[in-house]
Amino acid sequence: MKKTLINILKIVLPLGIGAYLTWFFISNMSEEGLESLKEAFVKADYIYLFYGLIIMLLSHMSRAYRWKYMLEPLGHKPHFWKMYHSVMVGYLINLTIPRSGEVARAAYYAKFQENTKFDKVFGTIIVERIIDLVMLALVLGITLYLQKDLEAFNEIRNSGKSDSSIPVWIYFSVLGVMVVGVLTILKIPVLKEKVMGLIKGILEGVKTIFKLKQRAAYIAHTLFIWTCYVGMIWVCAFALPETAGLSVNAVFAAFVVGAVAISASPGGLGLYPLMVAAVLSDLYGVENAGSFSMLAWSALTLFTIIAGLVSLFVLPLSVKNKQQV
Image: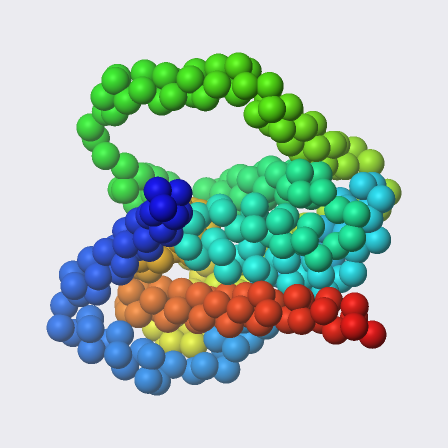
């Protein structure tokens, strides 16, 4: 019962915070802004949003195919659709608890792929996320280089930070919990064996990055994925007249803060519209930036929910049908 309650809180709390931020974003809009938001959803050119989502779908498919290069050194011969559906389920779960999708993705794939261990698969995903951080840093560098008003950009980027320092006792509390956790694992042989086995498996998965046979293809897919990410913002901007002429600088800036928002909250719930609107309006003077950010986030989230739910049910069904045949 207690474990169930904790699991529920893990989902409810992030969603609750995201819902509050969404309410905060909308409630602080003027009457004129609310009317513009309603009008944007009614009069938007949805064909451009559709094109943007196609680009996003291609990035997800490329990510799934690229994953094959990491799994092959583990002795796997993965089927593309198993990898794709696992990726989409991961994105779906990320809408509940930030970054929980990585665990769900590895578990989902391991469940439906024969002779596959979760820990090794999870290790390959860890490497993937490290590479994502490197690419995000690269895009951030390009973004900063393109900005003409770096002072204003940094002010907006840091606007969410609090001036108050974190109490010292919090650091000691976190350290204490970590020490107790480690000592508990070391004192209980069964738990120690399981944890060490998990770490060993994860490290074996991580090592696959050094065993890639098609490094050029892996790099090409990586560049394609991140080009799609930025390209989606640019294409979706054409859905509204006020954002149709976004500069390259603005597109990169919107993408960077949007990526941070999605990483920090469940699918960027509440935070994505706030941060993207702040950058586009305060730094570039874009009119109706709030409507665009809400429109783009809504389209992306709806796509993720639908595609994720499809993958959640399609893969088990296809595996079951194959076994019956």
